[in-house]
Length: 173
Image (cartoon, rainbow, N blue to C red; front, side, top):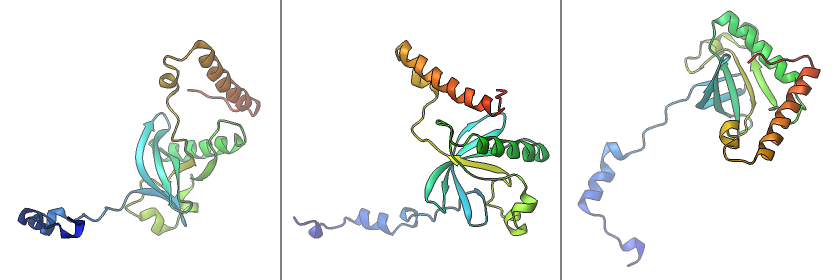
């Protein structure tokens, strides 16, 4: 039989007419951003002392990125967000450091009243940066690898830290 000659059974007709079988409209997703730059939050991938890290869709560039959203008290969050954006900006150009994309640490200045009051906005404060979707946690990546590979990874990490230290940036984690 030709595929156009296939008959629908009564069950298939009932199922196709059922309101439950129709696609439900997708609910709007939460986002961060300012002006025409929106980062639509896709999934949370981590959390730490600063706050939460999300994979987001950069609607303007049509790419994925990572977005850090602070979870501290608001005034402290403003301080750490400004600091995080500044440090990331100073580290640009060092291999292994994600590219800075955007941030908001002064919502009263950077966002309109309408933007600040949008119920879909996840946070007023954020730092957006390049996202590497093929990275694994180093402990999982190193599991079962030869010692020489583990040493190379350690040396790469130490090189990044050394370059940060030359810029007077020190990790406290």
